[in-house]
Image 1 (cartoon, helix red, strand yellow):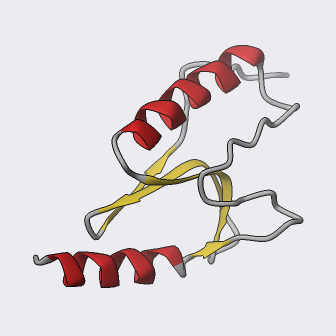
Image 2 (cartoon, rainbow, N blue to C red):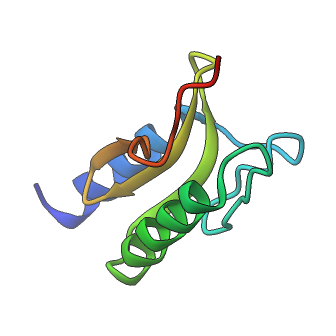
Length: 93
């Protein structure tokens, strides 16, 4: 896949994210969610920071076109990744 094709695929993938002031989902901005544990947010930030350094377009707490929310969405070279931080979550009864 050449550069132009990758950029085109990146744009198509980006259209699947609902970015708005209301959701706080902006490319390159980290969103801290107060309902998550501190450990969860720390892991989410570490992943976000690593992806940003590697040149990914990154969204946190992004709302997808399906209405689902994802901890991290990353796009690079025409490929999209949905990341959900799991090991810090606990079941509450």
